[in-house]
Length: 346
Image (cartoon, rainbow, N blue to C red; front, side):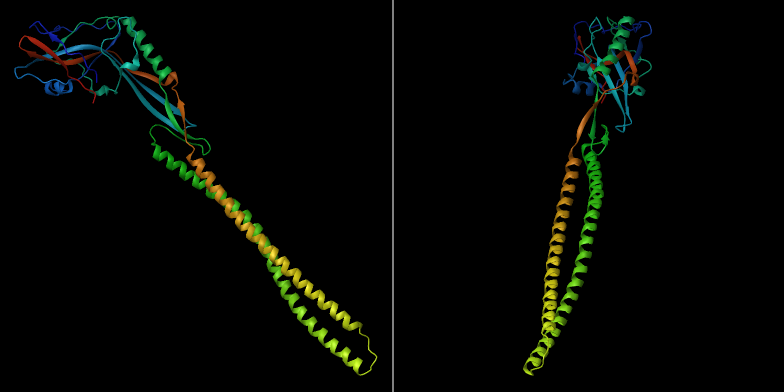
């Protein structure tokens, strides 16, 4: 809100002139609405109105009003955003030099501007630089240059996930988008890695089952060999005791075959133990790999930065620039007059 200094005028004559001064050349002219009552204006100005105070009319004071819409559009950043930049300068330097950042204001809805001044409104004189069309035009260019030079907005970014958010997206909403995308990417990668480990484990389990079948066969053969060896041994002893001439070579062959069958059993058991160990190690390795993937994507989802984006000159559109007449309540207290700003942008 533009706060004009309160004036205490010694003359009982009403301040200002009845006739509105003419603005120069093609300079635009606006009338700010009186949207504060005298008591509201006094409260906002931190004043108390004496009981003998009387409303004595409205005085318009000239201020410089500048307002531009600035469009930010960037397909890569999913950015489509508009900013309004407004400045209200009560007493601009006579040379037209303005530090725009010192006079930034809330945007003014141009639909709320009055087309004509209030009836019986009075006017202060229009002085430099507002009475010089050339300086006003130069100030307009300077206002646009200031916006181009200084204005920027921040885009929230997660470069790894390729997610971007403009000023209209809250930090919480953007963080949720990143978390959801990170979770989806994590699940997708975990699925691929899990499939790879499942193939390896399935192959080992197939070998394990095959080895277990072979073990069962080896154990059956071993039992058979032991029985055959026992029978052959009995026959050999019988032949010796009966003084028959019989070769012991068959007995020794049976014994070797039994030993081989036993060795095959031990070899199968060792191979089964190796397969079981490999499977257990792969399962532990898979679990660790999946945990690392989840931790990686959680960290990526939290890696948020900001990217400054400046406007293109072609996207700066000055909508209001010129002399704006700011209404003030004229309050008479005895022979003095007090001026209270009668307009607020809130």
